[in-house]
Image (tube, rainbow, N blue to C red; front, side, top):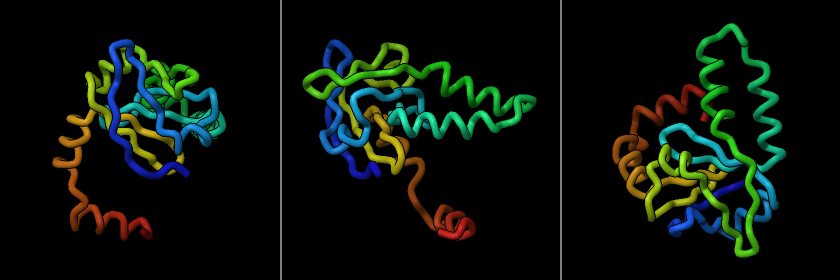
Length: 142
């Protein structure tokens, strides 16, 4: 399970260090793709396969399902870490996530998210965990 938050930065070649605590569970090869809310998401190969199996059950006749599948799979790239524990984030994904320099890498239970620090700070400002969200989670049994 991925938990925790780490601050780091991206270098001029588009490389970012993946926190050591995440590397073992991710493995040497993994999938990087767009996430919701303008972040990037890393899935281990095993978790990606499980997720793809779930997506395969969505109705092909659903316009929303097709759009969601295209959003995730069209941007997905298979990545490998170098000897220093870094991955190269392709320019198209950096642009999508508005990544320029400062990053925050967070554990998100079954995946890892990479955020531009500025984007995550704005997201947190706009989406405070307040009474309304707490009530919605209570409806879901949390």
